[in-house]
Structure formats: structure tokens, C-alpha cells
Image (cartoon, rainbow over all chains, first blue to last red; front, side, top):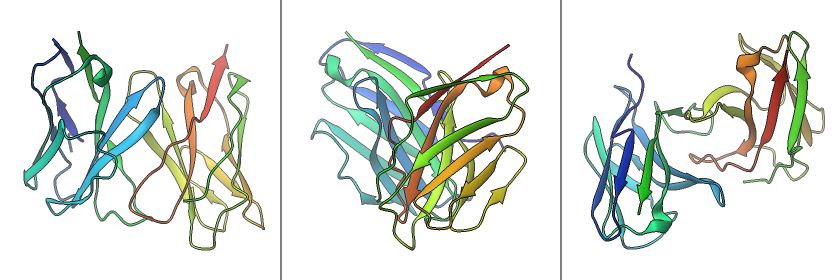
Amino acid sequence: DAGVIQSPRHEVTEMGQEVTLRCKPISGHDYLFWYRQTMMRGLELLIYFNNNVPIDDSGMPEDRFSAKMPNASFSTLKIQPSEPRDSAVYFCASSPVGSFTDTQYFGPGTRLTVL
Amino acid sequence: DAKTTQPTSMDCAEGRAANLPCNHSTISGNEYVYWYRQIHSQGPQYIIHGLKNNETNEMASLIITEDRKSSTLILPHATLRDTAVYYCIVRNTDKLIFGTGTRLQVFP
């Protein structure tokens, strides 16, 4: 299996622009998680889905952030409008079942820089 | 989820065992202990998890004290590629809540 796939790997944009990050989970995994990592705040869970349905979005920082999962093999995280403080590495992870005995598999991340 | 306490950083000589401690004194009965690591610029990687008993896999061993208030991750023969940040997480939900971890530096 190719593992979790994220695109783009690097994104540089200007403040005010819309940014869309993409994730393809491991086939057959029912759960998908979006995380953000910064030096100041470490790794934070933003939102997660079960069977394409958002379960917990309490980590989404502001209304500028939105996430969708239109089908089992694709998810997007959108920031509109972007701000310099959104600069971070964004990770997507998936797991087969999602219970607390289950392993999450992480993608390589997207490094976002907002100028 | 219970909080964990880990040393900020540790060093280990290549070929020696690396023993990474974690304190989770407020852990509750149904919380598992998970270990992940993050090699520079990569996504976190699962290492091992356990509830009460000691666990071993191809990567590491996990030793959990009888009262479950602390645990130790053991990398039996550390290599330079084991240099990473190691996260100890206690978990009883779908979520993983990452702390600051231990930065392990393996030196030649």
C-alpha cells in the first residue's frame, strides 16, 4: 500500500489567498484525521472523520478553516483567507477503525508558508 | 485523556539500549499507553502500545509499571536512524493528543 498521500508537499502563498490541502487515506480505512504542527503549539488535532462524516471539529481554529470528505478516498482542508499565522506543517492520518486500540498512520505532511 | 510527563531530551550511544521514560500518574483503567516517534520533517510513526502487560514488537519494547503510573520505551540497539522526537500518549478515545515528547539524539 502507498500509505497516506498528501498534496502538495510544499505550498507557498500570499496572505489572503485560498489554500487547499489534499489527502488520500489508506484504502479501507474508515477514519481520517487532520493535524497541524507548529513550533509554538506542537501537534494539534484539527478535525476527524468517520466514514466521511465529521465527528469532532473542535480543534479547527477559526471559520477560515474548513474540511470536507466527499468520499472514502479523498479529503480536503481549506483555508480561506489564509494568514501568516497559518504557516505550519499539516498532517493527514488514517486508521482502520478509529478506536483507542487502533493505530493511526500519518502522511508526509504539507508544509504551508503564508507570506 | 491523562497527561504525560517526559524528559525534554536524552542522548544515547549507537548500539546501546535507549530507555525513554514516561510518567502518567493520572492514567485511568481504560486508557492505553501509546508511543509514536517523529523523525525530522516526517509524519509521526507508530511504535507500540499497551494497556497493562509489557509489550514487544520488531521496533521496541514497552514496560508498564504494575500501578500503570509510568512506562518505559526501550529501543534495544539504538541506531543513528532512531534520532527523533518520541511521544508518549495515554488514550481512551479516537483521538491522539500529542505532548512535547522527548528528543532522542543517538550519537556514533
